[in-house]
Structure formats: structure tokens, C-alpha cells
Image 1: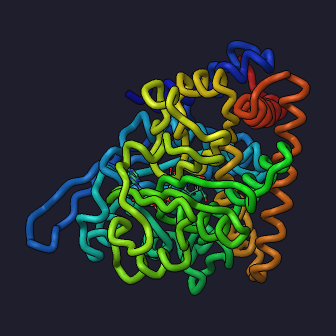
Image 2: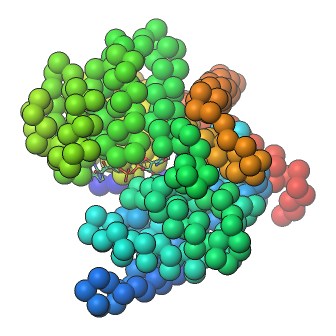
Length: 413
Ligand SMILES: NC(=O)C1=CN([C@@H]2O[C@H](COP(=O)(O)OP(=O)(O)OC[C@H]3O[C@@H](n4cnc5c(N)ncnc54)[C@H](O)[C@@H]3O)[C@@H](O)[C@H]2O)C=CC1
Ligand SMILES: O=C(O)CCC(=O)C(=O)O
């Protein structure tokens, strides 16, 4: 059973605060969110009935810049989860050294069961309810699980009705509306750069390693394609519909075609169906969770066989699992670094919108690689000076930068 997401995230924060020797009042203050918004979104359904959905936006911290983070559409969205994800965004933007704070939002709904027009109405009503609390220089949403560039296009359009054309109010937009080249692939590309950097530390490479990936949405499918392109062998893969494996390596371009043609993973011709409960404990070199939080917990951590875990999802590993994995010698690359490619390219998109000047994709990808590489070097330096693991290296790096900004602005207990 997974721990409560907020309890798990706060536990990691407190460990980092203690390692840094933070003042206890500052520690308490950094944990408390700036603002928590809850709205009822009532929309007419296609069949003429009315349905109501609860939407959240938690704005955690703005000491380093406008708050930033995705909007999730998922049935399990709840206030604690959104709070935890908003807090993670604050440390993530600081680790990545992009000038933002942290926020996250979500609506409790099953996007796969809503029609396109129902999703559009829901997104527009949600935006109407929060439009005066977000903005280019206050809080900038982006896609997360269950949302995509189209969701951002509707948010942009609805927000612009109140405030005038404002492309920089959301990132992860369609290119035609000011989206950045490379943003769609950015989180998966960042995961690939992070994996390369970590494996190199151990004298290994993507091309000599086997991979298991959970989640084949935006992050999982891009990570899989880019790892496959570099010669990595993806031997098992799963999504919410089921899991597949092939010892010789799954043909990812063929699987992409199969999925884009509307096929389910389990119907892919050149792999065998496997039990999804076995996916995370499948033998491999590198395990990459790219779906939900809390999937690695005290129940399955003892059976994990991977040597490295790259956290492409947000908070996939419970602190209890962390302890078990550490004893087994499994190296975990934490979410607030491993999946930061998305928010880094969101920052590039925002900069391009503000400047009114579009970058080519090569520049986006080169800059992303530089930011990922620099963050990794800074995390390693923290690990060395504080004698801690990668999660604490990343947390202390992020928390220290936020604490410094808070103090410089004139914080008083
Ligand atoms: N989209 C982005 O830019 C970023 C996303 N993330 C995180 O990455 C993760 C995935 O996000 P996206 O790829 O954007 O979402 P998505 O909605 O595009 O894809 C989610 C994937 O997870 C799978 N999934 C859902 N429930 C599952 C379950 N119970 N078991 C196995 N698979 C399951 C879905 O089938 C789908 O393949 C989330 O934790 C998100 O917060 C982190 C940073 C940025
Ligand atoms: O691109 C962004 O602004 C945020 C992406 C996000 O929600 C995340 O990194 O978890």
C-alpha cells in the first residue's frame, strides 16, 4: 500500500531541511502552500444532463518567480495529491535553475470517458473559475497526466477572453498557438539525458542496457522512442490497459504505429502479454516508471530487480520503498531532476512567447541538454558535500535555492 502523497513528499523535504540545518521556522514556512484553490465545475453533458467535477490549483511557492506546474485530469486527483505535486514543482524548478516557483492543478474526472466537447466545456469552466488567480507573471499551467496541448489551447483561449491575447499564460500549447518546438518530447528527452548521465557514472550506457517502462503516454512513449533510438533494449512495457514483454527487445517504432492506429498494447503482434503486477519487479537494468505516484512501495520494493530506477513519473517511490531499495543497492534518480525536462522546455516556451521570437528545435534540445547536465553536476556536488543519496542531493539543492531566495526577499519569522 502506498503512503499518502503529501506525507511522503513532506518527509523528503524535512530530511533535506535537517541535512541543510535550516532554521525550524523557515522549514515550517517553506512547507505551507501560498494558496489552495478548490472550485466546482458544473457542465452540461452531451446527453443533456448536468455533471459537476471538483477542480484544484495549489500554488505552493513564488519566491523564485511565477508559480509553474501542470494540470492533471484523473479520477484519483485529490487535495493532498495536488498539494504534494505543487510542492515537488517548487523544488524541481529550483533544481533545474529555471526562474519559477511551484504549483499544480487537477480535476477529478476520467478523461477517457468524456467526449471532446465535454472536455472542452470542463476546461473552459475550470479556466473561468481560476482566471484571475493565474497569469504570465503569477502562475503558468502546463499539461500533465490526462491533459495535452489541446487542453492548453482551450485554457489559453478562455483566459484570453478575460485578459486579452496571452500566449505565455500556459505552456505545452500547440505550435500554431505559440507552443515551443520540442516541448511535446521534452520530458521524455530529459529522461533520456538523465539516464545517460547516471549510467555514465557507473561506466554503463543506454546501448548496453535493458529497460522496463511503466506508462506509454506523453512521457513514457517519448522516453521509449529516444532510448530505443540510442540502442537501449526495452524488454517490457505497460500502460493502464495491460503489459507486454519481449526478451529480444520491443520494436518501439512499430508499437508507436500500432498505438497511433488505435491499437491496445496487449494486441501488439510482436510481444507477449504479461501480468501488469509483474512489470515493476521484472528483471532489467533500468526501470522507468512513467505513470502514477506511489507505485513503488514497501510491498513490492523488496522484489525489485532493476539496478537503476529513473523516476519519470512524479513521486513514484515511497520513502519506505526508498529505504528498502537503498539497502538492496538500487540507485534511484529522483523525479525532481529526472522529469524536469518538461518544465525546462516550458520555460523556453514562456521566454519565446515573451520575446515574440521562436527558436528552432535544435536550439531547444541543445539548451535542454545543457540545463539537464548542469543540474546533474550540482546534485552530485551536494551528494558529495553532504554525503547523501541522489534524492537528498536533489532535494537539498532545490530547498537551499528556495530558502536563499526567501531570505533574500526579507523573510521574517
Ligand atoms: N507531461 C509532462 O510533461 C510531465 C509529466 N510528468 C509525470 O509523468 C507521468 C506521466 O505523465 P504523462 O505521460 O504526461 O501522462 P499521460 O496521460 O500522457 O500518460 C499516462 C500513462 O500512464 C498510464 N497509466 C495510467 N494509470 C496506470 C496504471 N495504473 N498502471 C500502468 N499505467 C498506467 C496510461 O495508460 C498512460 O500510458 C505523471 O506522473 C506526470 O505527473 C512529469 C513531468 C512532466
Ligand atoms: O511544464 C510544466 O510547466 C510543468 C510540468 C509538470 O507538471 C511537472 O514537471 O510535473
